[in-house]
Length: 227
Image (cartoon, rainbow, N blue to C red; front, side, top):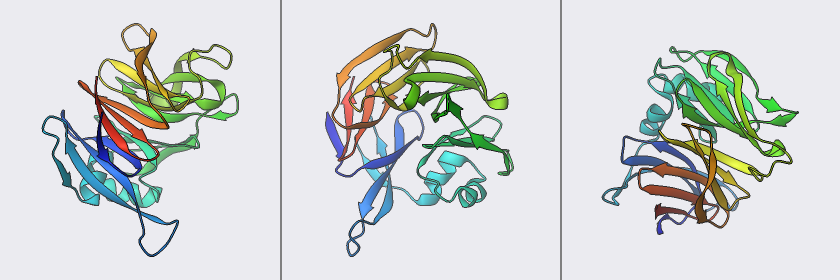
């Protein structure tokens, strides 16, 4: 693995087919315990990094109405967002609070995603649906965007398929579920079979796949792993 950042990365946004935007926590030099954020782009093919502006990050994450949406959210970094083809935006926070903004950036629907009174978190796109996880119930669920209606649930509190899931992401072929802060389980979108990625990571917070590259975010640094 190649380390690309010595700090904790708290958000990753796809930026074309071979690039991603990273948001890293930077300690305030004169204020212990407080942080600011920095933004950079990584080209996976060349390994080149470059600084990017906050507005460029917000545009990629929320679309053309990024200013209105980010002002409404306040904490626009620590949420998962999906910019849909019709320019509406689905946002989900780690506590299960979810919102759907229309193409004009107006909040049209908000509420709490939950399963058996446990919060449901995460947004991993899949056609007209998205995948989320429920840590309290050891399961992963797919919802229709229209009406935020449950479509499929995989796993369960006693099933053992997913142990303490803590993050979910997706590419065109699969859904990647971080479990127990160490392993990645893979759901094949074509048949819903679940397998292991075959890699183990320490203090795993987030995992993304970009073609042959895996992005591994931990509490102390971020790495690129060639899969």
